[in-house]
Length: 434
Image 1 (cartoon, rainbow, N blue to C red):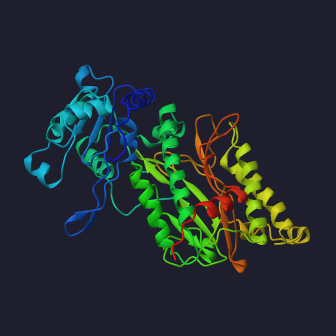
Image 2: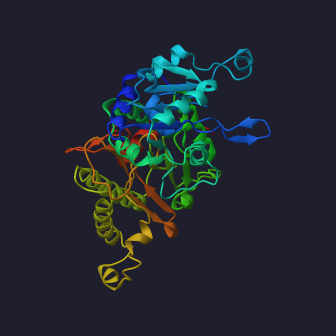
Image 3: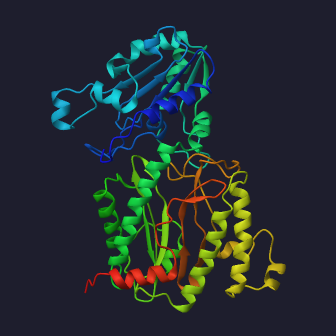
C-alpha cells in the first residue's frame, strides 16, 4: 500500500465494538475480497473488502478473520489467517505480510497461515452455536460474481446444517455508520489530497484541453500524495456532458465559454473523499452561469446547516427540493403558476434536479446506510445539490463531505467554491498550454 501505516488501536477498537453485538457462543468469519481476473494471466488491482479492513487493517488478498470470543481456549478467540510467503511468491508477486507485520497492523496476536485454516475452523465451528457470515446486503447492487463469503455459506449449509447462520451485515452497518476520531482523521487526509488535486487542475484547465487530460492531472496528484488513486471513476464533464449524471467517458474537448463539472475524490487508506466542483473553462463565469452557480451554492450552504443529529436523508431531500423550487422560479425555469398546475407524480423541480442531496461516505464512497437512518453525531455524508439545464449547456454540481454534529463540520471547507475565489485562482495560477 502507498499510505502511511495506521495504528492498530483503531482496528482493535472496532473488533471489540462488534463483539458486543453478537450472540454468545458465536463464530464470526470474514473473508477478504477475491482477486478479480482481468485477462488470461492478470488480475485487476486488488481492493480489500471494506468490512475486513475495518476489523483488521489488513490490506492483502487471501485473508480470513475469525472471532470466537467465548471460546474456552483464549488463543482461538481472535485469529487472522494470511498467505504464507515463499521464495517464488516473493520473486513473482512481491512482499506479503510477515506474522510480525500482521500483528503490528491488526493488533491480533494469533496469526496463522491459510494452510492451517481448515483444521482450526472445524474446531471453532463445532464449539459455536451461531456462525456469522458477511454477505453483501446492498439493496441497490447485486453483482453476478459470487463472493468468497457466499461460496463459504454454501459450504456451511452442507457441512454444518444444524448451525444457525447469522447476518453480519446489519451489525457492520450499525458500526460503520458512526466514525471514530481516527477514521475522521483519515478521511480528512483524503479530503486534503483532493484539495491539492483541485488546485492542480485550476492551474491546468484552459479552452482546448481534453477531459481525459484533466483526469490525468487528478490521478497524478492523488498518487503523488500517497493515495491509492480515485475513490471512484471520476466524472470530468464539459458543456452538455455535465448534464449526464454518471458521465465517465471523459473524452471530449473543453471549449471556451463552457462550464466544466469535475466529480472526483481521493482514496486514502481505503477511505473515500467525494468532491464536485464546477468551473468555467476560460476562467470566467458568464452572468447566466454565475446566477445558476450561486443558486446551487445558496442551497448547498442551507443544506449543510441542516445536517444535524435527528434528521434523515429523506427529510433533507424534501427540504432541498423546496429550496430549489424557489431558486428555479427565480431563474425563470418555470413559474409559480406552472408549479400549481404540475403533475404531482412529475414535479417540475425534478426536471432540473433529478438526484438526491446526500449519501453516507466512509470506507465505501456510497457507504453503508440508507435514507431512513436517523443521523447521529459522527456520521459523515456528502452534500451535493445540482442544477442541470441541457438546453442552456449548463450543468452545475457542488459537493462537499460533511461530519454530522450540532454544528456540522465541512471536511472540505478548504476547497474553493465561491465564484470570485475560483475566478481569481484560475486567472492567477493557470498555465498556458498553447
